[in-house]
Image 1 (cartoon, helix red, strand yellow):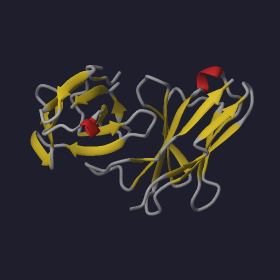
Image 2 (cartoon, each protein chain N blue to C red):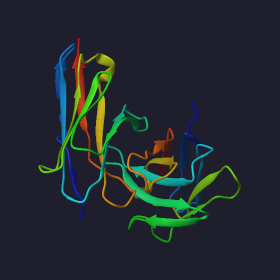
Image 3 (spheres, one colour):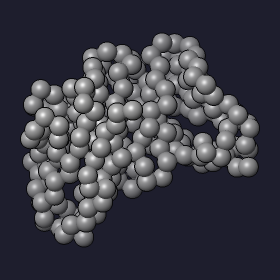
Length: 110
Length: 116
């Protein structure tokens, strides 16, 4: 059974701070890792993907992957109230069907 | 920017009735998917579809479910005899080349299905 684990939160951070969201996965053969943002009642929206160890930056977002520790994280710099959403971690393991975590609820308060 | 569209946005039905959820994937994508998300739960894979046939399906996708690509643009999910526990958001997604690392699935806005 492939598992993707996320702390459900909520994670509350003040506006302008760095939000750090974490995800662990069980399948060592996992190859691609995705972060989606989901606003309440809306569909998942892709933020970033990563497949190599290390960091990948895109604007205010940085994805970090450590395959040895089976850990992937998402950092959001200069957090804004509009970043308040649930962040879903998704992992592909050989198959192209991603396994989703339950998501972490992020609240950015002014 | 091309996007996946879904209709209807909200479907209310009586238990035991058949429903058809419709999706128009992004035009140059070849792989199509259905997911569901029960309120407060994780996104769950139902089925993938390529070249007019099912590529992969989950244990959720039992005999009451079917998918079809009736023409060159629509992709449908049929639930033959709805149950209360089928109430969920149903998302359609499409992707271009899932064999490649970094290939991403783009999700439609979803259909909220309510079974009474």
